[in-house]
Image 1 (tube, rainbow, N blue to C red):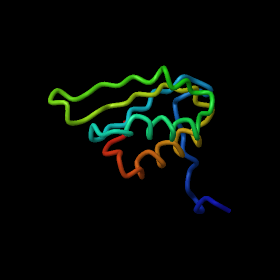
Image 2 (cartoon, rainbow, N blue to C red):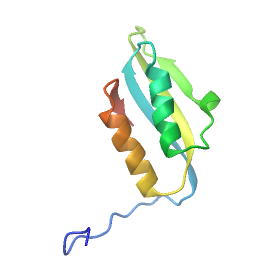
Image 3 (cartoon, helix red, strand yellow):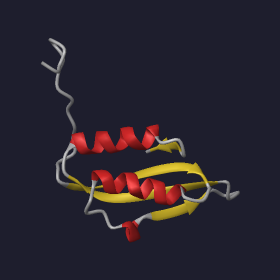
Length: 94
């Protein structure tokens, strides 16, 4: 049994499938955007990399990469979030 006794299953107000944006931020270094896109593609193989939006910080030191993908389940979103947050180049994931 994977749930603790008495624990409620995690509930979400999101209805799947849906388009789901996820934003990863990190230092503006070579390979950062590509690394984020590669992680997203592992969890959402139908994601179109050309659709990734990139926005540098005001001083140009950081880069935010937003990828909107077709999410099919909360488990998919959670796994993607976990992998992005554990990536050494990623500082923040929203």
